[in-house]
Length: 89
Image 1 (cartoon, rainbow, N blue to C red):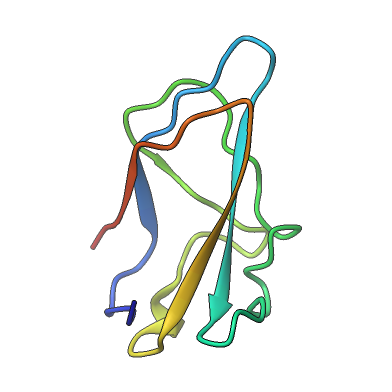
Image 2 (cartoon, rainbow, N blue to C red; image 1 turned 45 degrees about the vertical axis):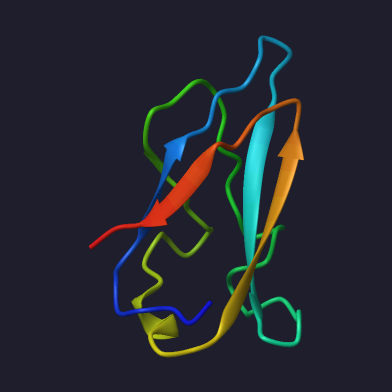
């Protein structure tokens, strides 16, 4: 996908079970290489049952610097379900 000019993004639904599941997201360039500050290790785990929750990395949630770039998303899901995601303005 080519990223637009939004700031931050939100999952529409990220339910996890009682075993402490989590979701982390890595943003990669078009060749599949992790982008600086957006690696899976930089991502703070999303835990719990949410209708919409911001994904955050150590440096924050602002992804507007990726505007116009082709990106890939890598989801690392442990004992959880991701139904959808969206970028929000």
